[in-house]
Image (tube, rainbow, N blue to C red; front, side, top):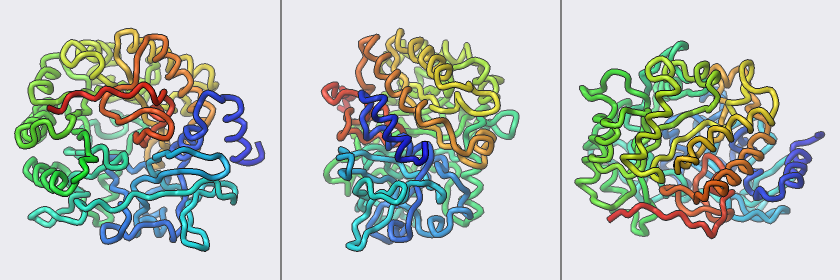
Length: 443
């Protein structure tokens, strides 16, 4: 293909059942987007909600390599509409790449657009600064630092432990830059709290609850790095769980409570449930046994792939299969030098994993891999996985859900092109709109 436009149009023609919006969204997520100065935010003093770096960098360069985008943050997300492809409303998480063929810029009238190969292909909307971001905690910390919101305000993302105890080359997941992201923000002098105090979290949530008058924020996620020993005297279940307990006691039924943690023994999972968590995300990362062992050495060492999967299945006894939603990192299956060399092989492997879990009523979801340059896999694979892999995965994902009679998982907002708000992959954009997700009760 002579241009990225030709590649995208070829895939839209070959896979007509995949929404055209998802093709562009996956390409932006896997390869990033550049921003003209006219499209950057004025950080927390402006009218546009800035990128919060809520857990990973999700950028194709370090902060010093991003130029002005490191000083004036880009928007947290963008919305694509219209253009020559008549795109329906599509929410995309921002992943900055100054070298991307996609660029967001303002035209002569000041209207933002997305440009590909020099041609305007969509109008761009940016998230307005929420009122709750304009208020600070009593200690001066910003709400964006303590309790940022993503998915166009649907999800409060509480990264309460900003580093991971899987540390160093022999333990860190090979695609993950959580520890580097912590280091780069501290080096840049940005506020980036390592362990968030539960009272700070509650105060930030009080501000959100007070000023989110339309109740756009519907769920919260508690997450952070893996805990192999203890943090603040607590093991992983108690550390993350005690935030949930405090939130549910202070704000009973206000939000859907979710936790992203390791696949823990059943008794620990029960503690999450007892603390008020409603949805459990014990991420399995990558399906293939060899790749799991290579790419997740800490998880293999401390738990092991087979035990990890057994624990995921066991957790369905606690939460119900529908409320166990493990994530995988879509694309690392094809990362050199160890990954699959053909899209066919990668899709076959990942579909095997989907069938394994969906046969038990568990619906995984996925994040589109962003090859962050400070990670081993990002350094070796700056282009990420082929776009064709991501498009075929959407096709395989929906087909496997149909095979087992499953519908869109709860806690992600509405499914369907033009309706979805989940921003770090297109799986929700690619599901039928009529299969409205039945959210857990917040009462």
